Amino acid sequence: MIISTIRMKGRVGKRKEILQTIDGILDRMKRNKGCLEASSYQDVNDENIFYLVEEWRTQKDMDRYLHSNLFAVLLGIETILADKPEIKILVERSSYDHDQEKDMQTTANEHYH
Image (cartoon, rainbow, N blue to C red):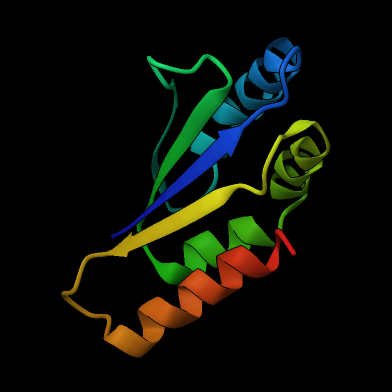
């Protein structure tokens, strides 16, 4: 299992647009093959910070999503963010080694450069 966390800090005054974008893709994301769960959260200390947490069955499932039109919609949010999104990926160690974990981190971060 792979857990991906994306931290996004929105520009002041763009909170509503960010929430609408996240809300618009969350249910569709959950219907993607291999998506076990997808949730969004708002920081309790800063209303402009949002987290998107996703659980994927396999790296292949997550990679398929990273190359999808749905992920492209999420990338579009970058224009109203104050900073680049921070991506963290946690991998259950049962069948992955350290090199594969680095490859997944690189793959996810390439989409934000």
